Amino acid sequence: MYDSVTIGDLELHEGMNGLHVRAVGYELRPQQMRPNVWVYEAGETSTKHWHKEQEELYHVLSGRFEMDFFDDEEAKEESLELETGDVVVVSPDQLRQLHCLEDGEVFVVGAPNTKDDGVVVD
Image 1 (cartoon, rainbow, N blue to C red):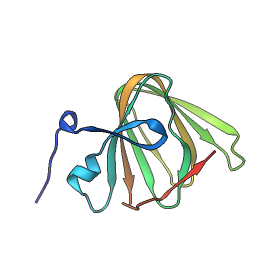
Image 2 (image 1 turned 30 degrees about the vertical axis):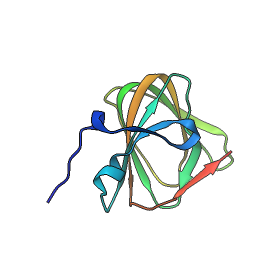
Image 3 (image 1 turned 180 degrees about the vertical axis):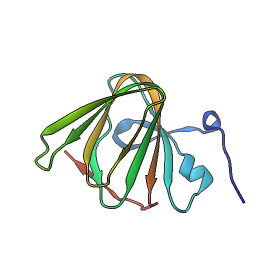
């Protein structure tokens, strides 16, 4: 058994932090993961966050991004530039934030499929 969808056919919904999302997971209802496509305009930023359980995979579909990684005291440790085709996997406990440098879309898959697992840091 399988389900499929074309990303471009999915409606844009307002997500966290005023960003827009194509809710792949809502459409396909997978049991083990939480997939979404986040749509960014240049200058937009995700929340600074980490997860209790969810590992996340980020696949840049278009555009350019910078992902900042922070230590336990919220000081920036490292930045990683990401562009179309790049993929990065981030462990649940790693504090991170994504910044959009050039309009684009990022396919993000969190696993396991744990609702409200994210911890936002102001």
